[in-house]
Amino acid sequence: MMSKPTEAELEILSLLWEKKEASVRQIHEEISKTKETGYTTTLKIMQIMHAKGMVTRDEKSRTHLYKPATNQGETQKSLLKNLMATAFGGSAKKLVMQALGQENPSKEELNEIREFLDQLERKS
Image (cartoon, rainbow, N blue to C red; front, side, top):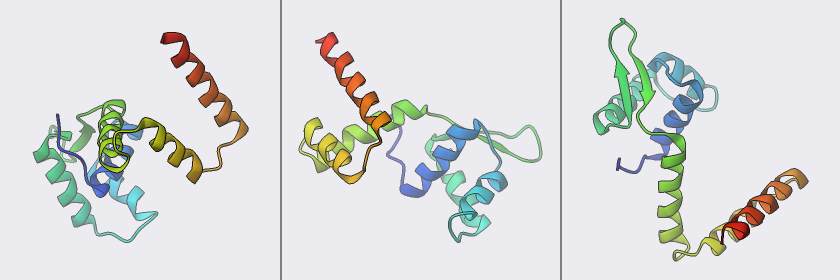
């Protein structure tokens, strides 16, 4: 299992999951839309992520292309498990209640959540 990504690494992973593969420049341009950061900072983080095994790097062309080494679902599951254990005493109920209390879910989202709960009930 890979190490837990930092906030900056998770931001880059999210962009890579979306794009499938990208150069440091492409990732940097996306990040720069929302915050001040230097190209060398983005490069350094992505090099560290490569060293940690979070991303793979295609070095065939002059512009190195990075791809996520882990899938989004597995990473989210791992982060959620960790958050649930550390911040919510292992209680899925407390985590869900807190999450829903922070947001104002739309009618559509509530229907999807209800459908998901129904599926879980049918399984048990």
